[in-house]
Length: 142
Image (cartoon, rainbow, N blue to C red; front, side, top):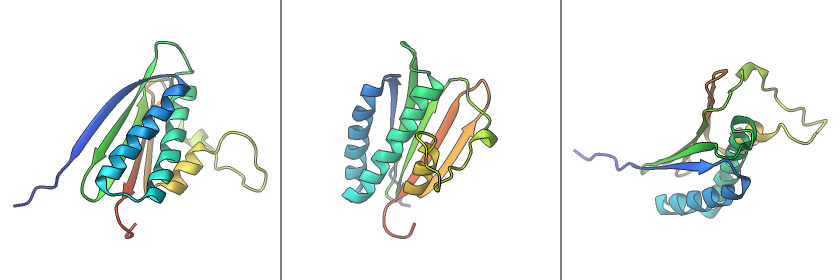
């Protein structure tokens, strides 16, 4: 019986924008090890940067001493990335789809994440933080 290889990395990150680059580099190293090509790695880096920025701004409100978390779970077929915080959370029904005919600054993060990743799941509960789960599959089947 061949068990699927699974590796998991967990990071607790200070709520500071300057650490998003560290996360992007970590992701690139893990995704490269799994076997993703540079194009998919770049897509994942953009999506993860958006999710981290959401956690810093909306979850932690850029407060000193607050942290958010990121988990990377890799298998032979996919990379799953979870970005989560213990901030105030939100009602997901209040997140509007952007009107791309009338672009404005901000409000595109979730849209960008969904367009770059193969599967995206968002969970949030008022007062209990937010979690964005992103999956990118290895290969062309997704």
